[in-house]
Length: 301
Image (cartoon, rainbow, N blue to C red; front, side, top):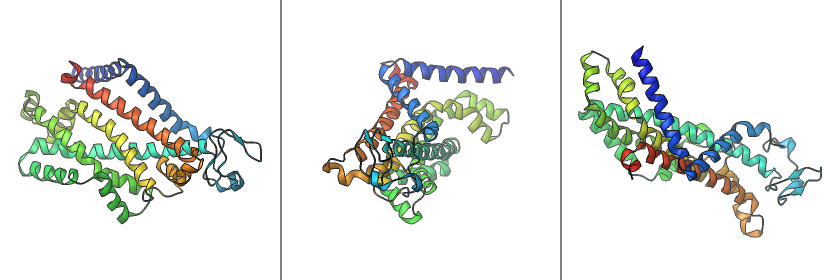
């Protein structure tokens, strides 16, 4: 019971230290606030927006390409204008934000689980297992992320879960390499030898003892990889090979209006682009601040 209490207290101090570190930087605090606002918008926004932009019965084609602050024929005010199909841009952006964040989070979490398991296994067992896993990691990291994702989606086709699968395949190697590096340091410590001498199973040693001590780099890499996944999904959707038109994302919204960007109808692409920029930048700033806080060498500077 004492060991469990000690582990709980360590976990509490770890998260408290991370939060204090973020709040200690005004830039990171603002970025964290933006992230929380966008997350709340993605969760609750679709129930609050005036229109479901993908309900054909709620869309009037005569309202297409209305500029911001325009009124429709029915008297509805479009604060951010409408796109080429007559959809309210604000509503479409809220739905697109939800899809983009969902794809980024799901792919990041799954890639984290796969990469962490393989990285811990490579560091603990070593030998041929370590060589095989790390050569596979080197192979994956040797190709551009977008190129590999494009090739996979060309084979798999469009769809939310197909994009998630493609992003997991191109992301897991980043986690595996970072976790292996941290686990190699932990493997030589006395608590691992003590756990092995007590007869604990290898999975318990890996995931019950070594994994908690490898959390700092995992959290940092995970935060940054979520932002990378969101950017990659937006790129794939912009190129027309990511999500289908029935599953909106910020990248798809940007693609819908880029051809009319220079003809004065800037809002169709600019507003979703600014939202995507704010989302990715805020996550990256929080991730960079976490890296500084959780890395003793950087925090001493």
